[in-house]
Image 1 (cartoon, rainbow, N blue to C red):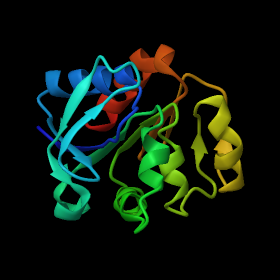
Image 2: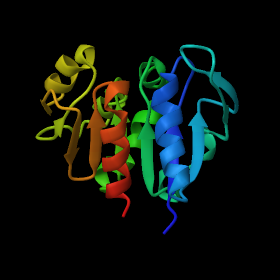
Image 3: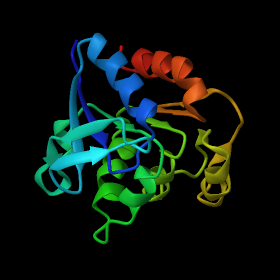
Image 4: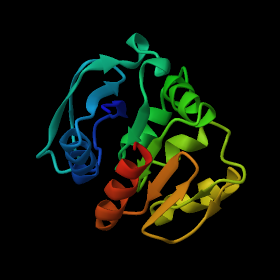
Amino acid sequence: MSKKIAVVLDNLFEDVEYTSPVEALKNEGHEITVIGKETGTVKGKSEDTEVQVDKAISDVKPEDFDALLIPGGFSPDMLRGDEQGRFGEFTKHFVQSEKPVFAICHGPQLLIDTDLLKGKKLTSFLSVRKDLENAGATVVDESVVVDSNIVTSRTPDDLEDFNRESLNLLK
């Protein structure tokens, strides 16, 4: 059954951490909506990947989506910089509602803004791990971690495992 997947994205995302999961999700028939600070185009870190933002965060409700994808790179940190905290609140809905959340590399940074990480088991890029621990999560160095409704991975090298477990959670 096709699911509606929200992808939160800003400039300087890690290209393959967007393209690979989105391709895997689309191949399984899922609908992707890219959400950013505003509509327009955002570019990946390599500047080879340009993505059209379908909806501004101000124009969407998390209730309209079945799952959330948070690619890494600098994008999650830039989304956390939203002065109104809209991306943190958007993400919080998915964690609280136990809807699937897929976060890779620096993506788990955005989960910190939910204030719901206490007792969660996660993984991430090395430089984010201390912040996740300080937010109450147990952080492990594994290619993919599934804790209830949250799938996390460390780096692009883990995309095969990340995509597999993300798709499994949607079944």
